[in-house]
Image 1 (cartoon, rainbow, N blue to C red):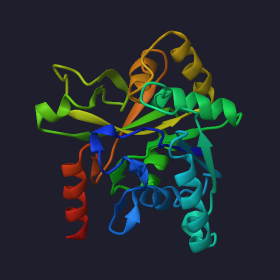
Image 2 (cartoon, rainbow, N blue to C red):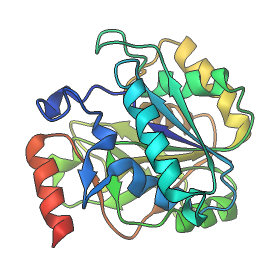
Image 3 (cartoon, rainbow, N blue to C red):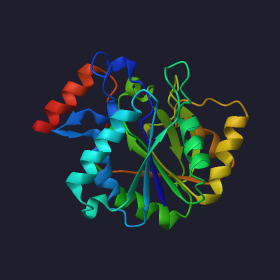
Length: 252
């Protein structure tokens, strides 16, 4: 399996914090968000490579980070996967490829022909990926992650899924005005090997390329997609206030 961490955004809503620093390298508890994610990925023995997709503006930042990270970790257990930094070539919000465009870019650039785990690099989460992987293996289907949210206003900011008794996704809408359930979809996904060509089909059809949830919202009508309900928390760091709140919460 290949893990892909999406880190090519410009995080303009977090300015001035992210003018000169990629959001994924912002620190929580003295450690970049990216390293928290890599520790979770490192628990998965099946992941041989972790691909981090950057834009051109911050590509050098990630290369510098990798030098220090690799030197400090010295191939410890949670650093077993090879780390590849990709530059998607974009230089601004106007030229960005979008999250789904970046996934396609990584697949084509590295000729990936394997299962992939996709993780948004700006999500700080506490649940373990081992549970997700076990569920994916058991279900043998493309997989999304969900959690119940009671706040309907908050639900409107997420993808929202309706799930049948067999865990199968039977409805999925990205940022709905009227949510059909209380299951919010968070930006971690596992796709089977035979799903990868459908990403190209999706984009070639002129579908939205930005929010990564738009692809499974399209996919569930064509293939079996299942939902894993995780235990723990996941936070999307979208504003300076949210970042400060999460840092304070982590310290506690």
